[in-house]
Structure formats: structure tokens, C-alpha cells
Image 1 (cartoon, rainbow, N blue to C red):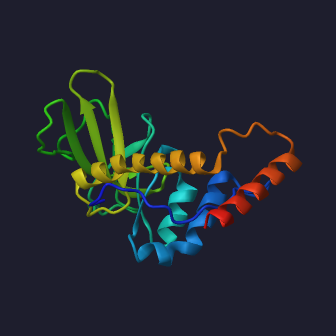
Image 2: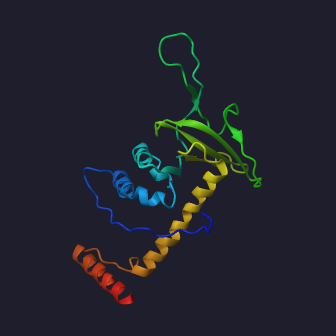
Image 3: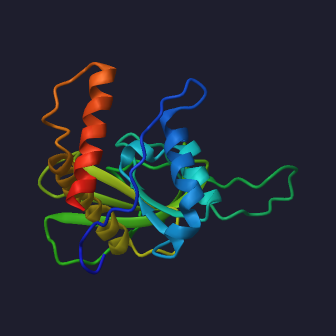
Length: 212
């Protein structure tokens, strides 16, 4: 984060399985390395594709905090403090659905920042799809109506601007993909046959050894 630079840790082929979804496979790829990752950072930043309950739950079980983005139609609920009514059953904590275009300022607070083009709000809300409470940052564009984005962190103590900074840094990994494709020549290979692809990979592997 300090150097605004992404570093490569591991490359692993995705083996599609009928018993697991892609999110299961990705979670199972990361989880075994959680202790190694936590030596560097305990926060993992992901694009909106990964903001689903099974994946986020597995990251939480592995001791990793998640920073990501919700879909624009994410179902979020305000949280009411439990009040004893003397009636049977659990006190009501659902304060109603969050309308990202018309926020209830009894729950949200405005984040002071220098950029006058956006309004930034933050609060702790319940993410229904994730089945847990998260810290959300809602960014409203002053010029474009309904161009509102919702970011979140499973770390309830994380500052709003830190969440945005971490998420925006995610784009740095695109440079790793670009460099990897150029180095391996994967974008130049037009082979579709399995045998040809294997032969190409073996050749690239031998070349990489020679280069070393």
C-alpha cells in the first residue's frame, strides 16, 4: 500500500470441478496460505465477484479480513440496538432496508474529504447476503444521479477512507497480469488443441530455465 505496487506470490491453475463452484476453488486456494499471507497482511482485497457469503465466510474462518465492493442492488439493513420490551422472543434489530440514494443519517455519517465531486458516507450495517455485519462506505457522485457505489470491509474498525484506498489499489494487479502474459506469450498462442497447448507450456518452461 505504501508503494502502490502489487507483488506476485503464487500462480496456480484453476481445475474446474463438478463438486465445487469457482468461488469454492478460489477459497480453497487461498485458505491454506492464510498464515503465510498474514505475515504480510491480514487484509485481502477482492472485486465484487467475490462478495458472496461462502467465499467471505471462508476468508473469515481463515483469519483474513475482506475489503470488496457490493453490487448496486445489494440488500443492506440498518441495525437497531436491542431493546427489552418484556415480550417473548428476541428483540427487534432490523431497522429496515438501506436505500443507497436516500440514506438515513441517524445511522450514516458523512466523511470529510477534499474531493468535492463525491459525497462519502459510512456506517455499520447488516449485509443480508453475507449474513453478517460489515462496515460500508457509500460513494455518491454529485454530478451523475444513481451513480452510487457501495464498498465494504469485514473489519468494523477500519476507517472509511482506508477502505476506499485499499479497494482502489486493487487495480495494481492488472499490471502483473499484463507482464505475465507478455513474458509467457500466452496472448500470442492461438492453439486450441490440448496436446498443442501442453507442448507450448513445456517449451515455455524450458525457455524459462534457459533464461535463468
